[in-house]
Image (cartoon, rainbow, N blue to C red; front, top):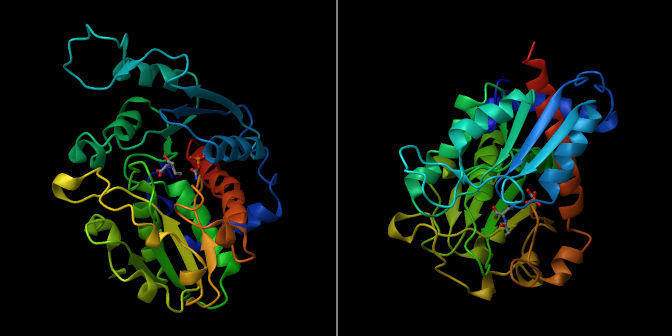
Length: 318
Ligand code: AN0
Ligand code: CP
């Protein structure tokens, strides 16, 4: 695996899952694989889980780790080519990236959608510049349109908890006070479609995701109807994707907050969320604290997905 940015990069899902479960049983099995290899993690945005779980994954593989928060102590970076740099940004990404590449063997990048220009976000300009100019294998730690380490962890979690071969998985939009990217829902949809579960997406009208990610999923605007018989409920907020509404908040209706009312019509569904989650906006205290809530084991599996991905990237170094 040369880079890891989307579900296609991981190849066969069953093989990847087997590797994940092998590593989960014996976390340090490949502790020699990363000896004298250095992981560099670059954060343009905040993180708790990704930062900690990816670092832990690197330690499982015996790697060294360097972390840089671009907004805390690094020079402010210009990202557009052709700009006359007479403003507040002393350095250009086009020098910074190859320099970062000099000090490491593998690079992880977190760079969220900016919501200024949909094409710019959906072309993954920043992530692709890292791939093009770093000279190193690059993996996404949530880029503008996807969060594959999260989705892989979500898949591992569903495989651990499912009671039928092809469970019904419902991804529901839920309200949030700030405009959030589509990366998590896009990516989750991409992985659920690849896993071939019975996959349903529910959201208010206007919140349609890019059809490339929706794929063969059923879209149901009636949240209660969508929840009927669900085995897994995956909640997430996202801002609008379509047309001039890109990046806008169109709905704040707390009837969409996941509560006992919706969970009651499910097949005793497990509740999932990638975290961080705003309680009583996305989900009630009761649901997230219920025995059916698997948000913590889901977060724990981030270490496992990251270990598989880093191991494969190191192996590709030859
Ligand atoms: C981010 C998002 O929605 O993409 C990160 C989630 C893993 N969430 C927030 O910014 C709150
Ligand atoms: N789920 C997730 O990626 O969390 P962080 O934003 O805290 O890394």
